[in-house]
Amino acid sequence: MNEIDSRGPIARPTLHDAIVARVRDMIIEGELTPGTRLHEGNLGKILGVSRTPLREALKFLASEGLVELSPGKGAVVRKFTEKDVHDSLIVLGSLEGLAGRLACANATDAEIHEVRQLHDRMMDMYGKRDRLPYFKLNQSIHSAILRLSKNEALVSVHGVLQARLKRIRYIGNEGPEKWAGAVADHEEIISALEARDAERLSKVLTAHMEQTWERVRHAI
Image (cartoon, helix red, strand yellow):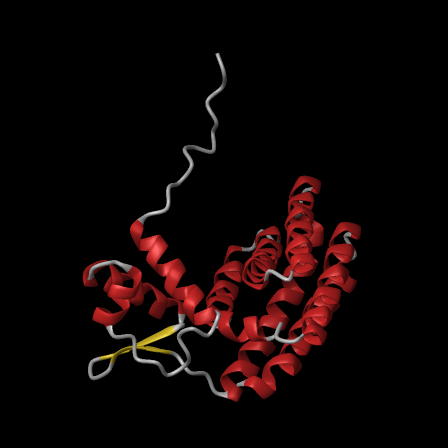
């Protein structure tokens, strides 16, 4: 008899998850631009869903910081100022720098190999110039390194800021030069992680956020 997998059943995506993912992608890719009012009726028709699950999805996206809810206007795609973005990237850089040090000390070899696999898949998407899947894998790598820190408080704070800046981070890959620069940073990140070089990984993660600001500042 086969052993029961202790990790439990595979989660099936719900309608809520599907709506959240679709609207999030529309915001990330710029189909729904900052400041756009999200009319529940019109958006529901586009997505083929009723208002109730859409309203719950918009509330979730508001908790991520991608959408703002107001009594007078309803749901609006959040618009960030330059200071909002710069301040957030400074904090993200510090959090990721700390996470890099902790990951080098706390991660297992198997966990580091999983990050390598994410990196290789991301590079495959880069080779195909398939931008949205590339971006999602890119974000998964950053989240994975945070998890390898084994510090739940750090993971939680980072997750809030990372979710809020998804659209901003996405535009950091616009243009071949900017995209190539981001990829070069990630090559250095995976190299330092596999070497368990805590100081180098911390520095490159922090510098990556500084470079992200330079890549996005003129597009805000």
